[in-house]
Image 1 (cartoon, rainbow, N blue to C red):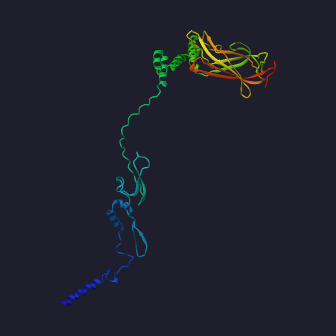
Image 2 (cartoon, rainbow, N blue to C red; image 1 turned 60 degrees about the vertical axis):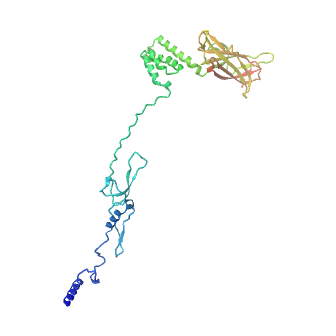
Image 3 (cartoon, rainbow, N blue to C red; image 1 turned 90 degrees about the vertical axis):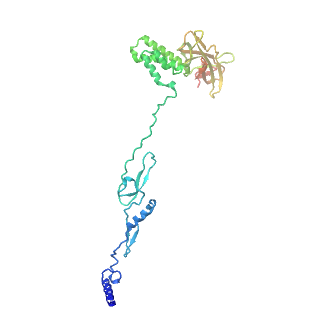
Length: 374
């Protein structure tokens, strides 16, 4: 019995020995270049990524294995290596990306690709527009200075054109008193010009326009520049614009101890002066005048101020043109050429005191008949 059992064991061992590929015997091993089992790197990475937190998944790098012939084989994974993707790209070929929003807080962040396992494009669904908060209506900006509102003036002009002056005056009340007066003088002429051309107007209508414009000029004249329109030396002065002028190189005879100098007649026309009505139903113009002589070094060598009574002019009607003959005798001066300066001050309205100046060359010599000096 014992021999039978031993024979069976030997027979079994013999059968095992002759099986091909048995690793218990060296002669039955296959070449190392054709291994039966290869390391499954993809499965290992998948298992590792599932066990690690999602925030660490980006730090995993693909492993490598080496074979007997020392060749390095790179195992590429098919799993996403970045953070979790939005729902719009789940289940599609993936890429590593980051959300980026550059200085536009009212726009959603856009994905930017920073690496990928395969070339692919990411389609981002359009963001859902959020309902904006209701905004208050924009209120019109009101003019800070209603006195300069042109709408009231245009409305007043329209009412004047349609022969409703009383209503037009109400619209002009937003302006100051002086401005109202100016508009009331200008609107009637404008109304006439809207209805008719200048050739179609009658002399009576032209007279109305002239009267209104004259009133306008009288209103603004006290604020305008006082001007000496014309000034010259004359042999004789008869009236406004009527005079006999001396030559420009005329030399005046200076005074000496035993005789006075030559009489100088200085014709002066004045513009933009004021002729103001008074309580006595007349008109007054109050002026002051000073004449000065300066030598070549601009030193004052002589001056004369005229009496205020002589330079205050009263008329029964308003003055529209003004001239004056400022006369004086030449003082005792050395021969030479001087600068004569005339200064006139309009003092009719103290709140609008204005000054005008003008200069002329003045030649003087103690010898009679001396030609013009240089």
